[in-house]
Amino acid sequence: MINLLNAVISGAINANTPDEDLISEYLLTQNARLFDVLYERYSGKVYAKCVTILKDQDDAMDAMQDIFMKVLLSIASFKGNAKFSTWLYSVTYNFCIDETRRKKKLIIEGDEKLAQISETEQYEDHIDDERLLSVKVEHMKIVLDDMRADDKSLLLMKYQDDLSIKDICDVVKKSESAVKMQLLRAKEKFVKIHEEKFHYDGQ
Amino acid sequence: MKKNFITMDNRYNGFKELERSIIDGKGDQFSQVKNNLQANKGSFDFIGNLVTLYLPQVMEVIGRFLVPDSKK
Image (cartoon, rainbow over all chains, first blue to last red; front, side):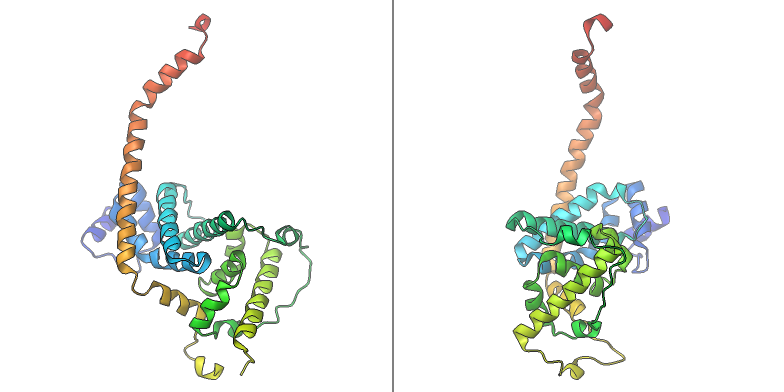
């Protein structure tokens, strides 16, 4: 462990040093430079999620600070059951969705219905991932801005963070079938908005 | 148009591209937030140390009020 701290101090730490090793060492030494390494790795990703969900750069910067403060103060409770990045993204998404609800008093319609989806309910994911991934970045922003915070969060988790369905279930605290159903509906909404706004015809 | 955007060997991902475009050029602001975090953490640590230092005395005083005289 001391070697890791020396590596940080001497600047020898590299991109391959696992997050979990940095956290263990940070909890032992409380050396702020170890947390700085985590911050450097993830501040951009956290900020990008905040901007996409909150749709305001100043709000996003404030949210990012609050999120990292929350992580800094509760990092001792990180058990290592999941990857640190998954835990951090979970804090980020839940913070931003709560913030959206608080500001707009958004009532998430259909949440209860989703929670009641039967484990055996059948659905067919008929939208190819390429259809979403191929959208131009300038169109992507406009389409996502028109979506609800919880729907776009699911799309970000899947296509930006590459989280597994199981990890997404852990983040949103819903069953696998509920997550798959909500994800499918989010994809449908994305495609519908994209087609309406940009007259996409698949060519 | 779609075919120009995606190649088999290097798959375009609009979601990751969006993330990259948002992050670009924000380095100074991220540094400012890092400084704020360190300052706030320092304040929390200071308060935490005060609580740790004086908690036994505070608990003793509270205990005097809570324990009835007959049980002292």
